[in-house]
Amino acid sequence: MDAIVLVGHGDLPEALRGSVGMIAGEREDILTVSLAADDGPEQLEQKLAALDDKLSGAEHIQVFADLFGGSPCNAALARYKDDERVSIISGANLPMVVTAAIQGADTATLIAEGRAGIRDVKAVARGEEDVVPTSPSALAAGPAPASDEPQQIVGVRVDARGIHGQVATAWVPRLNVTRVVVVDGVAVHDETQKMALKMAKPASVKLSILTPKKAVERLRDDHGYPGDRIFVVMPRVVTLRELDELGYGFDVVNMGNVPNRPGTVAYAKTVHLTDDEAQVVREVAVKGTRFTQRQVPADPENDFVQALNR
Image (cartoon, rainbow, N blue to C red):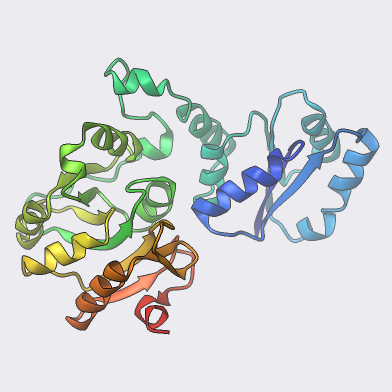
């Protein structure tokens, strides 16, 4: 068993743990120690000592501290300097902790992941900085697919966020995705959305942003994207109806994130549908598509239609 310990000032460790949970799923092996305003070295030492039982069975422990030389960082060093199981990284940010939670990595790789997440976003949007991140995991592309092999759809997800942390850091590596296909008639014509999608995708993965009609043409052709392992993302539920009207459907669709809006009903923690959207799912399900609901691959696969019809 491995464990992650987040140490830092104020509410930061708990907030970081919560953010990691949104992307990687809730994890019992991520622990936190926070420095309160009235804490001294003894209080920090006591808080770290209180984790000993939970960490006793861990083979490797990755400690992330917020500030190099800060009190939480120094307390972690004092406690764990002779513990061969423990690595300590300061300057913790979300990319490095998510990578540790989902994939696991050595200290050098995690530091590189953290640095790669620091970008001048407006410079990227202006084309003054390459949109391809340089993190090791992002650049670890697999072998180029052979052009004579058929494409394969390895996942389909309805997600209003498009490509984001859960897709890029959880689904893409787990399914060995080589191309993300975003199907949305709105995003195709929105330069801001297209730039955001390009920035969010992992560097090792190709991206196609297609209208429903163009998507049907490409996905029906076994060699539309030769050799690619395709992950399909639909930001809007209505796209399922548009594809159905074109005579195309998927075997399985995962309902990921559909936000709470006026007139919606919550059918899962992160899935809120209008009456029309719920009807779209029912209509498509009747024709043979199986609908599941989960945030990340580690979550249990729930039957979404069953939840819809309760």
